[in-house]
Length: 451
Image 1 (cartoon, rainbow, N blue to C red):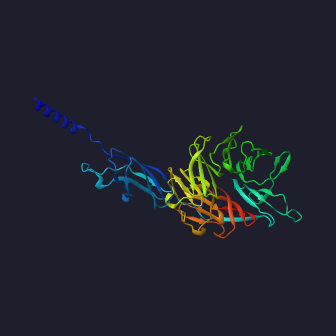
Image 2 (cartoon, one colour):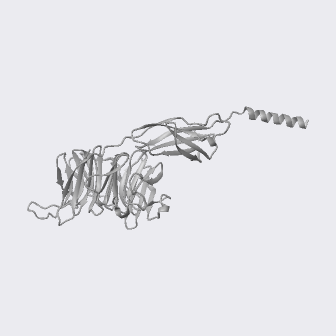
Image 3 (cartoon, rainbow, N blue to C red):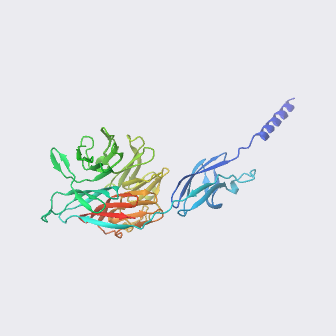
């Protein structure tokens, strides 16, 4: 009877095994993002024994082979052509395919159309202001529209008698035909001053903010002086807002403050570095960067609730083998978010953070730690700005002014010269109009660029 019972149990178990349904491997492919020459696709697998190997087919031809160790994998495809349509799918490699499968497990097919390049046919005009007895500089610029552009800084000129005027202009305005020098007043203790303006943020013709060691607000009727010393005891280096009622200022010594339309709030940054740029990301995110040249250091702060900021990235004087693990090298003077899940950061090197992974911007020549010896290709990157990932600019020291069209970078305006005393300090672009501002020798300089 025991022998019969064992036989019965064995036969029951074999029946169960024979009738249990086989779980087929599933491969689901989705497109995450695309540029002019690259595609990012997410592969999700189920019922697949790992690790394993897959082939990525482009137009039914194997283009890359990947090793999979997780069920969710981000696939990166490069060397594509601009403005082309491709069909991608993923297939389990033959040697990884169980012999019981008549056909290799295959994903769904994904159609990918790459972005087109943008034109690099630009025309430009250069304007210079200043006198030899004083240093003139323009720090920032804001385009309201192509016929309404403001640039700010300090510009010394001669008076009507031809003598140096000790009172500098602190702004210059473009009306579509000409630039006009302006003196924008700040009233302190009843005294009218015309201080150096270091930053500007313009929401409309009747809502313009000027950053000094405090604030000046143009409301369409008059200039209003706002003393920020009690909650922001520092120079304002950059400003950003979604509107005049949702507005940030950042500056020296890690200072951040926010205006909600009713009151100002001081925000703790957790750093003493001078903060130099601010950008908005997706889903209410705010990014702020800062740097210090003397210590070759930098920082990027991130907020997801617009109140509390945490360290997102750090720059330090590290060795090449340490980079991205997790630190970046050097200063982080500027950031720009391109709305395609990519944060760019610039200083000694141009970086990008995509899908939470840091890397060099590889399209920019000599852009790696140890490259660009003696600034032979470009200078320090002080500003990044763009309309899209295939229409972006970098500007900085030594007349560094490059435009990226999605495939290649091109120097615009005067030829690059590592010995040139020309620093581009600010840039703004809107569609086919770009304005860069800075200083050349002891004079202020503006370049108005049109495509």
